[in-house]
Image 1 (cartoon, rainbow, N blue to C red):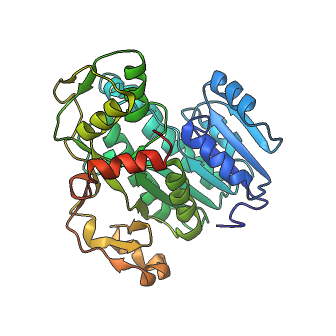
Image 2: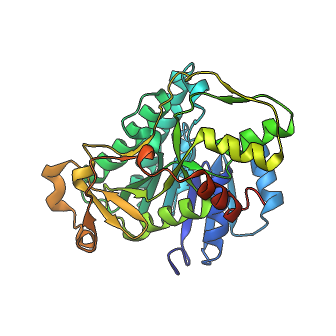
Length: 334
């Protein structure tokens, strides 16, 4: 991945978040010309500046809903990583129109600005909840993926390459399950469990960044890059954290909330026949078959056609002991 960003100008939408900071730190190691961070939260920008002081970082306070701001942020950009999104499933279910404005209209704005400003490559950061979605958040991210894929084929002779990445819970990120549970333990609160059968994929920030870098390096347009991940039972995660913190309060099973699945999917049965496996990730090729002749997927010759019918969290569950080892490996617990 060396020299992928050397002398490049990179824009990260939603860049003041956990993933944005991780991306900035890694990209800075490759001596970019500049990194533009677009986010509507000026407080997060301030905290970002306090945490990472580097003259190559440019801070843009603005919203992806605002096409004029997105145009300005993408001007003379080489690479765009589109990570801005509304993500809180529970809040989105009661604020659908706001989700549409950010996750769908905002994505259309990014596409338009990339094409107008001759951006070289653009990567859409999606989620496992976009695969066979059952909630508004997942549906909006599914549409976002489709926007990126379709835009790759209707751009005419414009050069921008549009590709996507799809992954699960980032272990250390704000709002993900582990920090929430640890915070409840520290505050001596009851630990809720929606359903003891529930499983989830997990990914580290380093793995998420590497997947995005692979999409930038290898993507030729219209693909979705999906990491090969482990999954865990949420009930066992609660048990491991309770044991680690010597916490005695019982776990309260509260039932599934609106928009939740028992298991998450990364690749569904429709996508599996056009998915190829590589070292550490899969690539889902576009289903817009009549346009395939316009795209050279030469690198797929080095991959193997997926042999599964679907890629579900229920099929890659690690044991409780293995989960504990991984949490120690990632310094979540000691």
